[in-house]
Image (cartoon, rainbow, N blue to C red; front, side):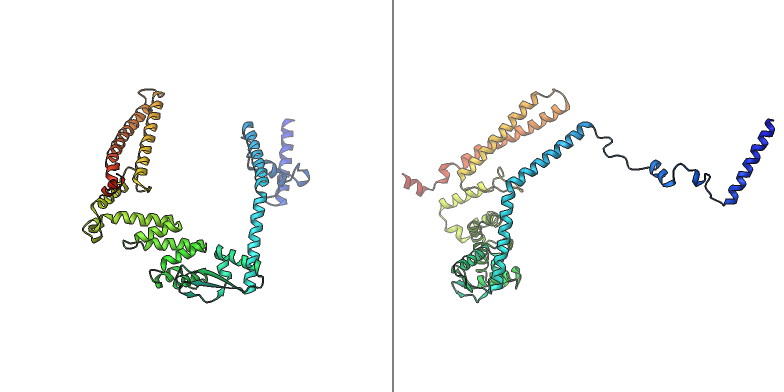
Length: 371
C-alpha cells in the first residue's frame, strides 16, 4: 500500500512539473490568484531601508533638544521685539535715500567745486551724492530750501584745483585712482586723501591710504605721519612712524640737521629712540606707541606687575597638584622659566628707570628756567 501511494505522489509531481514547463521558462511557482501579497508590497515590507535617526537618541537628549529649540524661539521673539523698529527704520532710510538719489539723477542737478586755484567745471551731482555723504547731505539740504535749484556749490578752498580734479575723475570712474596719483604732482597726492576724508568717501579714502603707505620714504615720513594723525589713518600712521624710527640712526651719522641740534636736544632724541626700540614692550606682531617716556615707564611697570601676579597664581595652582606627577613636573618647569623671565624684566625696568630718569629728560635750559 505504501509503495502504491508513493508511486501516485511521484506521478502527480511529475505531471505538475510538466505543466510548469509548458507554461514557459521563468514562470512563477505560485499562481497570481493564490498569492497573499504582490511583489511590491513584499519589497516594501522586507527590503533594507534607512533606520530611524532618532532610534538611538536618549530621553535626556530629546529633552535638551526641545529646550534648545524653545530657547531659540524665545530669543527670536525678543530680537524681533527689540530690533524690529530699528530694522524697519533703517530700511525706510535706505528707501528714502534711494528715492532722493533718483530725484537728483532725474532732475539734472549739477555740482561745482570752488578751490583755491579756481572753480571746477560743472558735472552731474548724482555720482558724488551716491558716494560722498557730505555731498548727499548738501544736496538734500539745498533741495529742501530751494526746490528749483539746479546747481549746488561745494567749497574746497583749502585744496588745489589739481587734487580736486583728480578726486572728481575718480568718483566719475574716468580713470583709476592709481593712474591719477601717478599723473598728479607730489604735493597734490595727499590732498586727494584729505578731500576724500572731508567729503566722506570711504572707498577712495581707503584706497588712498594703501597708496600713501607705498609712497612713504625718508623725505616725507614726517609729513605722512602728521597727515595720518590729522585725518585718522591709523595704518598709514604706523607705517610712517616705523619708517622714521628705522631711519633715525642714519640721521645721527654725520648729517647736517643732526649737527645743527644742541647737545641737550641730541641727548633727548637718543633717549627717546632707545625707549622706542626697547624690546620689552615691543614684538614683531604688535607695535606699541606712547606719548612720552613717563607713559612708557608706566606701561612697562604695569606689564611687569601683571606677570608677577600670573606667576603667583601659577604657584598657588601648583600646590593643588600631586607632587612628583608628570603634570606637576611640567608645571614646575614652566614656573621656573616664567620666574626667570620676570626677574629679567624687573631688572630691565630698574635699568630703564635709571636711564629715562627725570634728570636725563630735562634739558639744562629748562632746569635753569624752572629754578
